Structure formats: C-alpha cells, structure tokens
Image 1 (tube, rainbow, N blue to C red):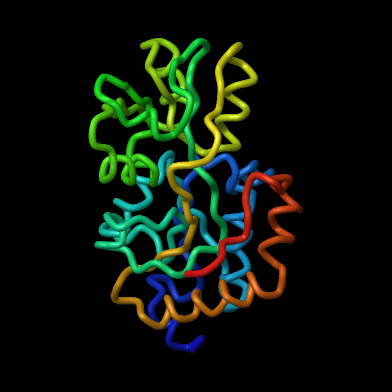
Image 2 (image 1 turned 135 degrees about the vertical axis):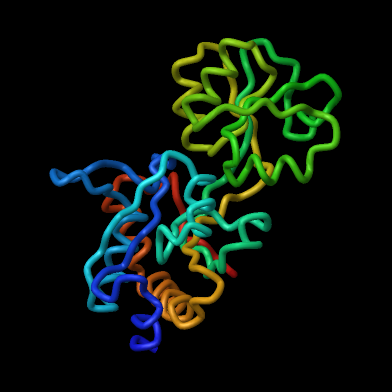
Length: 242
C-alpha cells in the first residue's frame, strides 16, 4: 500500500498538505519556522512520517480555498470538513474529529431555541463556504444567510449589522459570547462538523493509506492525545462512525 501511495505524490520526496488556517481549534499556533501547529498539522506530519517522506504545508485562509486548490493540484492531502458539495471533487476519508455547531443570539433576542431560528425575516451571519454555511444553505427554508470571510468576519458582520444570529462552531461562539454582554449561545446544535482528510479522487492508493492511518489513530488514542496536547480538549471530540 505504501508504494502505491508514494507513486501518487506529485513530489516523491514530500507530502504536500492543504491546511485551513481559519479553524482555530485545529490550527492553534505557528512554529519558529512559520509552519502551522495543532491537531491538523500534526496528523498530516505523522502521515508523512509513516510514508517516509517530508511534509510541506500549503496554507489557506478559509476551507473553501483549500477545497478549490485540489483542482489546481496544489496539495496531495487536504484537511477540511466533509461536506457533500466538496465531495464532488475531493475523495474524503472518515472523519477524525468533530465539532458541534449552533447559534449565538444578541441580548434581548426573542429567539430561544434552534427551531426558532429558521423563520421569515431572521438574518444569520456565517463564515462564507464553511461546512456549516454549506449545510445551512441546503437546509434552511426561511431565514437568510449573510456571509463574510472567516470566523472573525462573520462575527464583525453580526455585530455591525445587528443581525439576529451568528452561526458557528460551539467553542468559538462561547468565546464570542464572553465579549458580547447579554448574548446567548443556544442549547443543542444544528449539525456536527466532521473534520477529515481528503485526496484527489484519482489517488486511490493514497486515500486507502490515509484511511488506514486515521482508523489506527482513532483506535489507539492518538487523536485523543493530540486534542489534549494542543489544549482543545472539550472543544474537539474524536469522531465516531463514518
């Protein structure tokens, strides 16, 4: 399996890794050399080590940019959330971590539950082309999505435009709420973002190699160890199922 995976790398001596810098739970810092640090970069580095090659990080500001780059052959593996639209051009392995998504509402909001959000006239701020933006685009019937670039952009839009809700990752919304007096994070969630590793569809051997690595990493406790090591325990959880 290793030889087949190696034969599919664009550069036989290194694994090119597409990393989304916008997910602050998966990329939690930067090394002295400028490389990203966190659960996602560590997973990629361990895959490269298992293959016996070096690792080269190709970084992007948003997950949508990571997804777009597959068609330009800019990475061998990309670490972003599984999503049906993305799966049209990326072959995803099973998820390795997942993150709950919900809404933040402003002070004195009449919205009390997730079910209250999808109503006519409700305006929701969201990070453009995040996995939960794509999910909400498919599932909302009445509420309107207002998009901005990245988590910070969505938060700014929510505040400055006085929107009715901010969609996002539960841990990030809890932090946002601390700086917005009276705001509330709604109980429950509208979906769970499943973070995974994808390859180009034609790279069947590489996908199989990565799939096996992920299964072993979850079963052995490696993913749980990385979550604890990078200080995101309680914010990320090891993905279950497939």
